[in-house]
Length: 176
Image 1 (tube, rainbow, N blue to C red):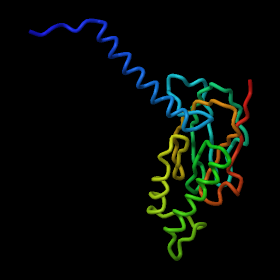
Image 2: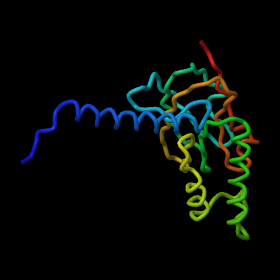
Image 3: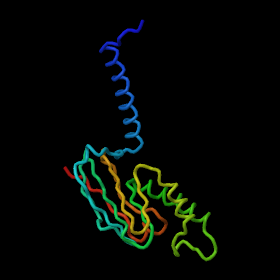
Image 4: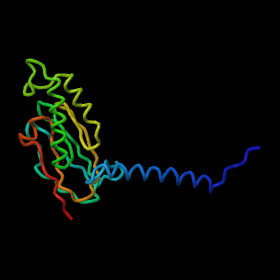
């Protein structure tokens, strides 16, 4: 004979599921000291970011701790570009990784300054599975939703080799 499961057991099950989701979310939040991927339902505002060759349309973006921002990203340049949120040390490390990938794939007649072939772009896209960055081809648009926490020194940048050095970076400024 089957028994009907009562509300207490169902509530316990729901509690376990919610606790697991909260634990997973807190692990994700601890991956970056300055925040974590945000949820659409928590967006407090949208910021449009245009990426041109060697610059962003913003040099600084004001943020507030606890704020969730939807970044609408538009690559208006002729080269692939990235929008990454990170500390300066994290950007430097990521730039080195990208340089290594590009150096391994460089072929005669296709230097790093001459653009990127499909194989190189695919390799770089494989490096962009991190939730704090988006890589876009020329003419593409995308979005990144980020919940800001902490008061670390963070910036947004394009970490494709040479782009940061050419001025493709800006600072997040904490307001009240």
